[in-house]
Amino acid sequence: MKADLIVGIQWGDEGKGKIVDRLACEYDMVCRSQGGHNAGHTIWVDGVKYALHLIPSGVLNPKAINVVGNGVVLSPESIIKEMAQFEGLEGRLFISDKAHLNLSYHAMIDQARERLKGDKAIGTTGKGIGPAYADKINRIGHRVGELLNPAKLCSSIMNYFEQNRDIFDILEIKTPNKEELLEELEGYRVKFAPFITDTTQMLWRALDEENKRVLLEGAQGTMLDIDHGTYPYVTSSSTVSAGACTGLGINSKDIGKVTGIVKAYCTRVGNGPFPSEDLGEDGKRLGKQGHEFGTTTGRARRCGWFDAVACRYASRLNGCDELALMKLDVLDGFSEVKICVAYELDGVEIDYLPQNLEDVKPIYKSFKGWSGSAGVRKFEDLPKEAQEYVRVIEEITKTKVGIISTSPEREDTIIL
Ligand code: IMP
Image (cartoon, rainbow, N blue to C red):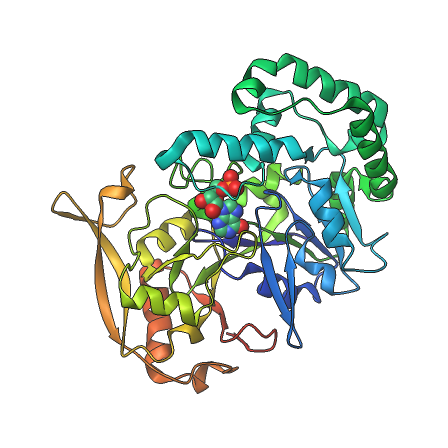
């Protein structure tokens, strides 16, 4: 059977974790194809909060198999902490032998580069994502499969430090102690050996079976895509649906339904253009009502109104069959809500994303606000203004809304 795909439409943090977790009980396999522990997926089940970074969100459903694909950059240290939250992961979690390692020195490089950039900093999560992907593209990275031979991997990492000494001197990063490094890598071998495999083959077998259902879980969001996002203020992986193919070793014909996840408003962490950002009281209120603090870094997220221009662009780019509209309840209590329906660039109205997105001004349409959408589970029970808001989003983005979330709880979800 074809795989279904969940993809972030905005700047990440759209609430993908809740949807993947809710849907995971219907799937036999849940796969991550890109990103690393920069991702933070929060899932609430029965009032308990789980924060996942690398392990796919299907982990909370005992029947689902979870795959970390070749396109992911894996921090052994980070995933070990996550794994400690769950029991019986063997046979339920598999990590691609081709995924790249994101080791502690990658985070040091990331943070040092950000410091050197000063006010031009990207505002990364500081988790070493960019440097780990850069090593991969430079063909000097190390793959997860190499953990199975710690002695060889240790020599290779020592060589890497020797060859890059000049850069490390500028960044003030010391060469690791060889014995300590070997010991660390040996520990990883013991820990990860049962989980490392050729996940592409596993996935092909599942896709070739009639009844096996596979879900692909995107991380970050379309506007942070390395090619199609707000470059250079982006992450270093391909966050769009096409990235799921290379990040797992499948082809475009293997993908069935694509669901784009959007918040009913917009947020962004880190620097870079954000046309519908609201720096006034409304933005503050959205942040407060939506608890907009990063799962990974704890940073306050920048907040603003729903950007229908960016959403339409992202929906087309990903081939979305439907949108899942998250956190509609956060708009409860506003007397007026706004949607960015177009941009103004040099006095001209445009309906696309220009290269110089930082120069556009948002053009808004205002709508009467509502109260009482929190916890609603049927579309017809939503306040009529909220229903209207959903219909307007469908019209402007040219994509139907198939799912609406009205609280962090798994069951407070409207399926249309
Ligand atoms: P990096 O991925 O750590 O290199 O950060 C690059 C940009 O992507 C920064 O603006 C981060 O705040 C943003 N970013 C990375 N991962 C996430 C995420 O999971 N959610 C939201 N923003 C993210």
